[in-house]
Image (cartoon, rainbow, N blue to C red; front, side, top):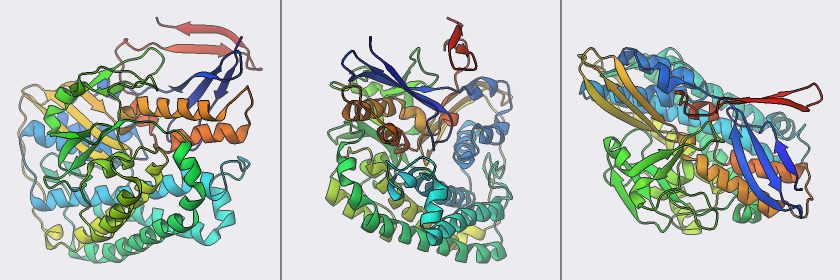
Length: 482
């Protein structure tokens, strides 16, 4: 009989998951699955609430990326109420989104993924973490902590709260930015921009060249991509149109409201995450590594692939270098980290640009709204991928239906495929060690998943399985609802 290897918990990610690797009789990998072992019910318990409450409620989906849900929900409210926020209201939302991006990309690259590269994937787990990085490179450690704090502090100045914001409201932004606040924020944003420049230069000189072999082999799959672009094809993480790209680089653009014409969702019995797939390709859904069907990816690499250009000068320079080296679409999974640093630079530049925009301190930041029966779809690019909120309301503005497709949900199938590829590449004849298993985890960490954000369905159609074990880990009984 074969053997099962269980990696639990998967470390240095947001949320909780385990990896189950099934070996065959020869000790080679027969199959690998990523089991997400948490469940969130926001799609269900948002129903029956006044729709204007949702921008405040959904921030509790995740404390790491509350701004993404807050802004997607506010944009969905705009659509439900049929309003367009004033320019200053949209720019303040955009500013908060870019600042949140810098904070979160710094978190992932240096706190979560960076230890694999700075300390090495085979280093002992006791030092393969952010503490190990800080001990090995104390000056970098200080910069990392300070620049994460700067991002959080800037959001507090703009909105009053950085973790569970309330300032994006239907029709705009509730708190105008004063000139004094703008003057305080600008040097802080410029400091983050300098750190973003340092980060990508440091990685290109000291990290990426050492791991090109791993980049070319670990977790590599061939998929399509989804992201947001402006009308002229520039990357945009706050607003635009959705672009769905096939593995061959051809693509189709569509509005937020049209997403159900292009994307469908499938449920598998072994995961609490849904499996979105490209319905418009007409090939169905399959995670068969040799012949995948309907599979696309979101997040940093996807956005770099679907975009024709970047809208800031430093970002464009890095974008051109990346594309000249890896082509379009770039498929290598570990390139998510490189793309993440390009986005860190772009968003830091964009934040400085917005703070220099005279409109940013306008007092006209919101307009009045009136409840009505309607459907609205709002979308932003969360750091972890395309985030879609879809609400329906009755004539009193009460939510009657809610669907959320989160960045990590889009990446559910690709994560499973990448982990399966990594396990099959690394584990042969039953031989493995902690370094190999960490490399399997690296295939997950490349996607910067937020599993807390991604598990929502709660209507009885998903199975619940509970394993009861004794103090030694021996299975005593399994309880399940199907």
